[in-house]
Image (cartoon, rainbow, N blue to C red; front, top):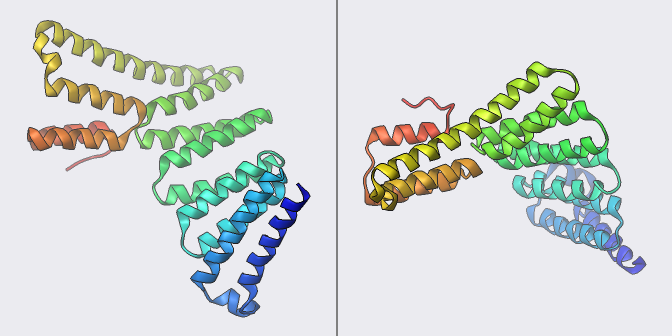
Length: 265
């Protein structure tokens, strides 16, 4: 493993040389994209080699350096990916640093509207904090995760986070909060069951309905809602509309279901 770490260190030094080749002040005040891209590649390769050597802290720092340069080069999503890589490494040796880097990634994903990714890492932070028995902070991140999942209509994932919040609320004797959350989850599950029961009623009344394009559309939309598949929801409507034109009322109602908090004119 020693030779792998040595190679990783050499790559890190090459990355630093690339960034400092123009002198300190030139590097500080100018942006040379090609030089930055080469340094990012060196840092990333170094990070992967440090991972192979199981030197998790040095791997984390290498990926963090790559993230900082990607951010500086306006490659924001790539920076978020690097921050997550850094966090995943630090998760094995330094929980606080891991959380710091997950939060950096979350900030980018939130700003870019990638709310499911932001939710995913808030949930991961909550789970890490649970392992550290920091229940109050874990609850905060479960709440943030649930909010982001709801924004993307990923209610199944949101409910998993809400269930955790309710359980901890009950353990803290905040029974009112726990009951309110459990009722919210129950209402969602009942609504799904009610819709499917209604569909079955219509099929019983008119068996041919089950083979209709309208029935298939409704079933597809329900599945998309349950799994938070916003893109699939839109694609299903577009596909149906390409054969059977939907009127404005149908479009408005379907969009309101997709984004319950939207107010369409």
